[in-house]
Image (tube, rainbow, N blue to C red; front, side):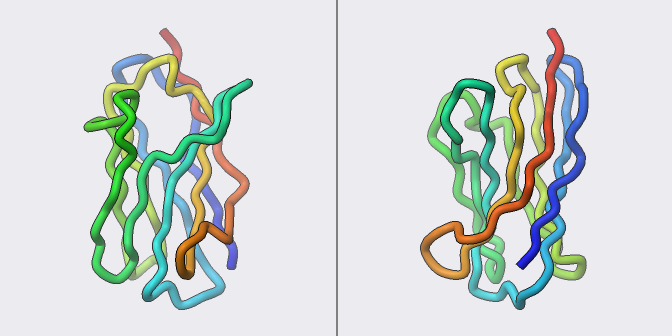
Length: 118
């Protein structure tokens, strides 16, 4: 399984960015795909995930992301998206996508850097 995240870059505070994660190497029916981030000096943080078959999403309860981030997927292109709105400087991090065939995220992409300027 390969996951390739893209779409990171520099954005001003208050702006939006959509990250993509191209998935390949498996039939993802029954899997769930997630987004995480890791800021310098901090632990990796769960953001949200989507169940591939149903499209049902689940998000972190953290006030830092609640209501601003949306996970979606395109079955035709095997791509998972993370739409981020109202970005803040504290959203600066490397963002990772991950895939779980069952309960745990067993596969990880390399990450894409998002930098939010104030």
